[in-house]
Length: 249
Image (cartoon, rainbow, N blue to C red):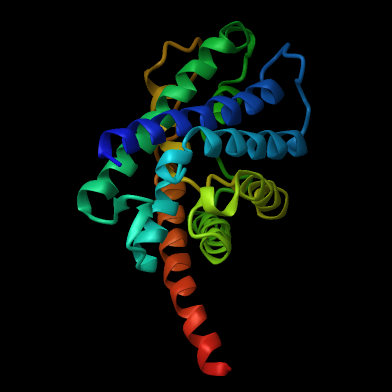
């Protein structure tokens, strides 16, 4: 498979992810929508369905949709990111580029769909929350730990059961994301994906959103670094677990 196909697959899959995922947050958070005040459980299920759709769209590239997943596969020692896609420097950058661009584009389309409600929403914080995550209690070390743990669970389970999201199955990955959201998502909003947070945050900064306020760049590195660390740790641990199990037997 050509890297061009990989790139486009990840762009469209990650765009679908953020279009639907950020879209459910918009439906809950913005003034006057039909889903206004739908609650955190509605958000977690919406994100799960967003992952379900994104994985199907990006099936040809293995549906990483997330640099933490890509990095986890790299650290785990996989020979291929997807059938016919070797793990090397060029393919890694291709996945990263497609994921970040897709996340940005999906957020832009989401904004277009909710434009009138962004205009009607008086709170800048609610507008930012549609695009990117933020902590319930701001504490750099603990917010970072939360993101590391949540992403570790995501990538470790993916690697343990299927190798890639498409191998594991779209429904299983979607339910895993819902599970992470309801169990570990409360402290930080569970970015668990650098592209999902950074791409839409850039969109928030660039789009002409009425009364949008700050994009909170002082926090923005946590949902990037935390997931990358968590994904790397998951890849390393998932590589060691079979060795330990074989030795124990």
